[in-house]
Length: 306
Image (cartoon, rainbow, N blue to C red):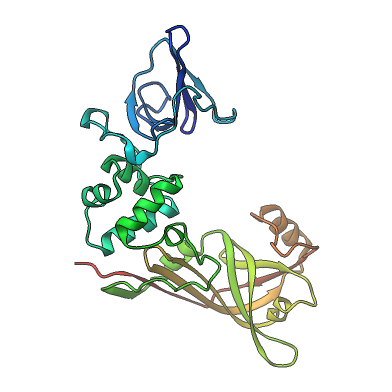
């Protein structure tokens, strides 16, 4: 038997007339996908270590998920605590809800055990929710929100369409400058950044563009009559950043340098071929603009160390 993360483990009951049990495989213990597995059962949301027997089989992730019909689905808050021998061993990879829950819990100065007790759920499930992408039921979110003195909308990311920075500031923030090499790493290979230009009437403007990094230059596609095209043949500023609202931390990188239109046909073909994505704005944007960094600076804000 071999499985991948996200596959279903289905256990058929050998008893005549009895139902079957299924769950999602959320943890592997061997690189080749052989048992045992950490399984999150669909009827309880409990995560346990499972050594499948002859009555079990794996349904790959691409199949439609099957939910057992003979046992009522219980809310994860009603499950018993998983024993240490069966504790899940998943890799930390929290989802948005998990990050928000963890941040609110720490702001209240609560341990996982205290929070789980208030929310009437297993501490192991709370650990799972904070450390793995999860989809808790509305009843679970209501109890968590009540336990943490917040709202379900907040835990779900309500206000996500509002401008960034609406969250609480860190109690002890630290703002530090980034070295050029770290700035290059954060720029990565592609994403969305903002270019500062002067329009034809002399007014300043800042516009977002999809960009790539090729041969240490920032490149983006546009059309000749666009605002972004005004960046060509002059010195411009280009900025990219990332904010983690749940953790009240983030970084920004600022590039200053001359921008020019890419005219060499071979270079244009190479850029088009290597581009990671097409512009979100759509349309035929075949004018490539390249920004050569002269200065590269950045800052990161996070909790103070020590």
